[in-house]
Image 1 (cartoon, rainbow, N blue to C red):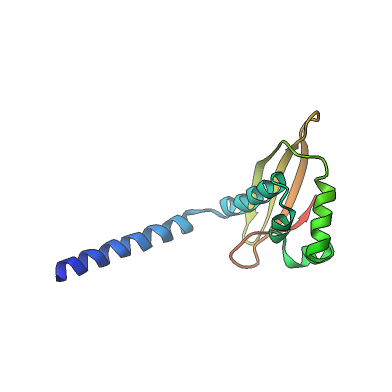
Image 2 (cartoon, rainbow, N blue to C red):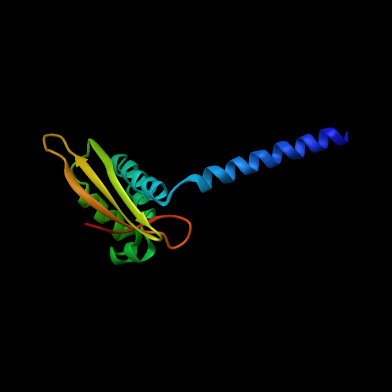
Length: 129
């Protein structure tokens, strides 16, 4: 009985440790890239409310709250997008930039830079250039 409990406890501890190492193993660049990729996915899917949820509260407020943000995204992405590629991410401490290339049918790639900030655990979009 005691061996079984010890083995079960060891397996549980190993699983928790592996999860922590995976989360800790990501660099800030990788975490910021994930935020940019999530934004790209929501835009391609035309899920603008989900895209706006990736924005920081003050940026969303500058766009007119959630409704204004959704309207802004619909206007910005009125022409359907074939592909959005995250080409470069630079993140340092709590600030970062993600450079994207947007491909639309019949046009060459156009650039978009997302300004990112990590006020707590998650990277948020706080501006676009």
